[in-house]
Each structure stands twice: as structure tokens, then as C-alpha cells.
Amino acid sequence: MNKSTLKNRLYEIIFEADTRAGKTFDVLLFVAILISVGLTMLQSVKSVRTDYGTLLFALNAGFTIAFTIEYILRLYCAPKPVRYAHSFFGVVDLLAVLPFYIGLFIPSTRFLDVIKVLRMMRIFRVLKMAQYVGEADLLKNALIASRRKIGIFLVVVMTIVVIIGSLMYIIEGEEHGFTSIPQAVYWAIVTLTTVGYGDMSPQTPVGQALAAFIMIIGYSIIAVPTGIITAELGLSTAQERNKRLCKACGHHQHDADARHCKQCGASLG
Image (cartoon, helix red, strand yellow):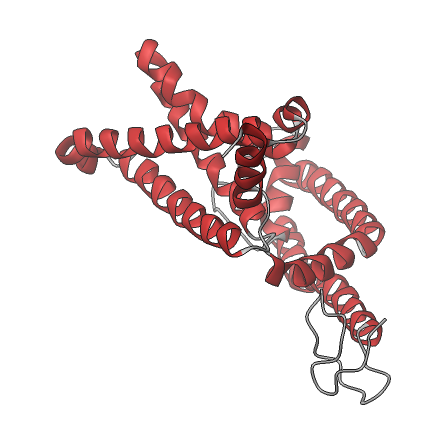
């Protein structure tokens, strides 16, 4: 096998998710990412780290070496290695392995190991397998279509919390823990989103009435972005069905890359 053939074969396995070898590679990569992230999480538990620290380090080292080899192979077989290295996933791949090697030479930077959880972001690459492309496009189109509405919604919410926070600062004051307007705005955000940490709470009757008001409107506000995205997702789904509708028999449940109707065999073009 010459160099050119080897690069093409590696590219097919590593970058092409619609081939048998590519699908197998993506599944193995998916499992490896989940296991390595799980090991990183276990290492943060003191009792587990004390009892199994050496084993966890060895396993993490093995996965890191494997991911490093994968990164080097991606650079080797990519048509434009520099472009891949500067791409989003290329940077994620590098950041996923770099902290381990830095920690070997500078022990005080071992806390950087937490950056390895960025490997979870690589799952999005794996999910670009052929059977997920159509669903991913639907979700992407729905999010893009609703971006302006969501943007306006966020502006309205920010306006509300700033006004409510400012009023609460005036009503409650520093003696009740609302030491500044930003602090009061923080309380308004926590209350509006129904999180309710409880680290700050109004003490005066007027402040409690205002808090009750913002709690009630919080429930209705939370539903707004969900409704916007759901409506756009339904619209995108309907448009996609119409696009993939067989004119001969009316069947619409086709794969994203289908060219002929699975029901009657007619062309979908």
C-alpha cells in the first residue's frame, strides 16, 4: 500500500461517517470519549483518587495516548492539515490531550486536567453520522429561524430583571442583604428562573409582594423560548416532509439521503 492509498484509506475511516469502517470508528470513538470523561470525573473524587489513583492515571494516560495518535492521524490524512488544526474540532482535539502532557512536566498545573471534559464536545462530531444528519439539520434550522425571537425575548427578560432588581434595591436596601443594584439584579434572575438559591430574600411586606409577583411571571416566561423553538421545529419538520414527499404515492418517511421512494420506488428528485 503506497502513501497516497494509505492516506485515502485513513481519511475514509476517520472522516467519512457513511462508510462501514467510518461508522465503526465513530462508535469506538464515542465509547472511548464517554469512558475517558468518566475517568476524569472519578479522579476528582478524593476517596476514589486515594484508593485507585494509580489505576485511574494509567487508564487516563492510555486514552490520552490513543487520542493523541488519533489527532496526529487526522493531521496526516486531512487534505489541508493547517486548516483542520485551526478548525473548531481541531482545537478541541488538541485541548483535550494537551493538559495531560503539561501536567507531566509541571505538576502544579494538574488542575488543567479538567479541560479534558472538552472531549465531550467531540461527540457532536460523532453524531454527524449519516443517520443523524437529517435530524441535526432540522434542529439547526429551527434554532436559526427562532434566533431573532429568542434575542428579543432575552432583551425583554434582561429589562425586567434590571427594573425588578433596582426596585428591590430601593425597597429592601443594604440592611436586608441587597447591597447593590447588581446584587439585586442577581436575585431577580435567580427568582425569575425559579432557581431560588435562598442566599438572599426580601424581608419587608412590599419586597415580599414584589418577589411573589416575579415568581408568578417566572413560570410563564420560562415557557416562551420552549414554545418558540417547538413551533419552529414543527414548521421545519413539516417543510422537510413536504420536501421528501413522494409525488407518486404520498409517502414521506424517507432517509435524508434517499433518492427514491422506499414505498413505490419513484424518484424523489
